[in-house]
Amino acid sequence: MTVDDRCISAFWELKSKRDINAVIYRLNDLLNSCVVEHEGNLTHDELLLALPANEPRLAIYDLPFATEDGTRQNKVLLISWLPRGAIPQYKAAYGHAHAALKGTLDGSHLLTVRSAKAADLAYHRLVARARTAEQRREISEHGGFTTSAGQASMPAGGPGTAPSTQST
Image (cartoon, rainbow, N blue to C red; front, side):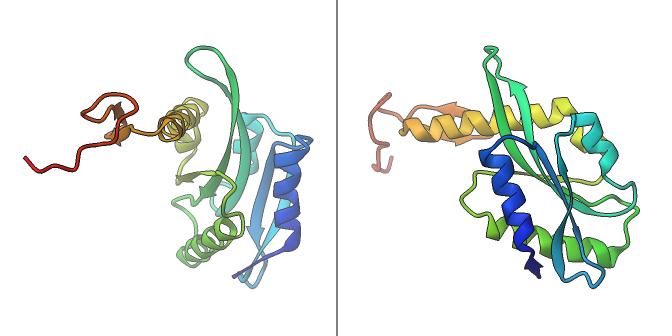
């Protein structure tokens, strides 16, 4: 599976210039190369309408949201749209394309979202995932914290101490 150079340049345009907030990718007719289908500024509703009902697509979307304290944030999502009515061969090809695209954009701090129906991409669900990902990132940056079932906790010695390696 190859990823067309335009796919990468469109992604970096989204990340750096903020002139666009969405890039939708499709596979070529031979199902062996990922190409740009659409790029532009889309509302969340427009993004959902741009995804075909019965055909897979990949999308990069810069999701705007507010944190629980009201701070405005954005999280770049890599959406894998694999609707239930899609041809299985296409779903498999898009799975390979997803891996190729993600590998090409490695290190870009993308939140991966897999979806089979529009409800999976509901704004409130995407925001909840983005907030959770942001909280996990903040916890890991502060060190000494662990994550278990979505809950952060301090190591036994308290903040700023290393976890104990003793057996009890």
